[in-house]
Length: 284
Length: 329
Image (cartoon, rainbow over all chains, first blue to last red; front, top):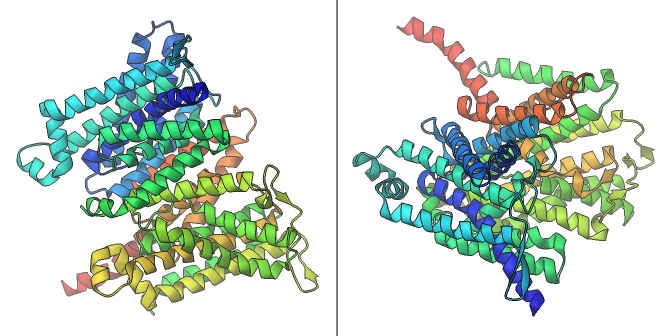
């Protein structure tokens, strides 16, 4: 029983980082119909930046915050290349972001080397429902929930957020009422950079990240976003948490090396089961 | 006929060069790998260009072809020629089976779905003992027909070239067939194609299986050349490279795959040589490789979204028609 609770709690903590990366996919795809393959790279750049800044004696919180802000800037650059040229097909943009993730890997190796980096975070443990949990993982969960709440408020309560949603649901009508759809797309990329950077900053203290982690990060985030049909932040959160728990349960009761495969299989099943509802959206 | 003369000449020169090159090169590893990539990318360019479906996991089918050879020869003692012919069939069958559910996905979903497939094939290879397990499969016999057995690298270079020739011939035949036209209709608009009587789902599975059979054939040739197979033989990066080659060369063209594979391979080879110069740090090689991959993809898609071959074609076409326009004016 105690074991089960441990797996559930660590699964939820792991899943919240999937959800955070997934939210970056969702924000960009909602507005631009582009899937940003560089989402995993944004997380890695965020974690590398925070480790460098903290090593330069920037205090905690400030160091992480600057790293997250800089990741937002990188996200903006990614957006500029991916959708800056008019008439770029979303599938071409996907392959462009794949190219950008390669460039990001080159930069990361050039600046930070090939070894995994793990910036300092919270090191203590807390007992929760009788299970030992790293405090860092609880911090991830807490900040993820906060980020999702912030996104929900932003999209539904602010003018800018509503303009983003408008560009997402009907770009033509949005242009008619004076919304610059392209600028909204770039803003979405910047937000995804912030979310990706936040994910990287939060994940790296408990799981060291290297240039090589971009694919697993991007895949797990995409898998979470698939649960929300790449448009719903809330269902992405649920999907991420579900994937995290499923992965930890597999690792605990079956075999640790099948953890990713279970997540991928779930993703495929969800995608195929819901494929009929994806089609009209892709046709737009 | 006259319109195509420069193209026919270019193809002839390339074919002769490809046949002579193995006799002049001292080490044929690079040559065989390039031809192998060209076979895979020809199939991928068909899939992406004609059917409008992206695959980020083409390596999965290369792996299936390689495994057919490795398991067929070492476990069941099948003759090399039989497994070579069997490899594309097995790869196509595998693609047809997984393609039926997978190809209900489109665009981004299919791209990630095929990538997921590749990672699962890798896991299967590392955890099932028959497929190599932790150690991979070694001891694959040399290629041979009847009593003749291949010695050295040269036979494999011509084997690979022969396979590439067969694949190109088949592609040309298919592109001009009813099936080829229905595929092109599919890429344009699925709804329109369907209303014109194209069986959408079946055609997509068929072209997916066709591209997989090319990949399987390439995997088989590569396995005879490098007689060892493990899950590390088919990294995701290799599958991304196939996409880069297809995009750089030109989707939906006969020769795009070959041109893309040769150009990207040559570029990578040059970079390899440059980055292994003394005095450079050991990280120079991965940095250059990643930067080149990234820059190639981004620049190709932004400035030459149709690829080298179509861009060159229309450029030549413009050169030829310009004087005529002048006369008429």
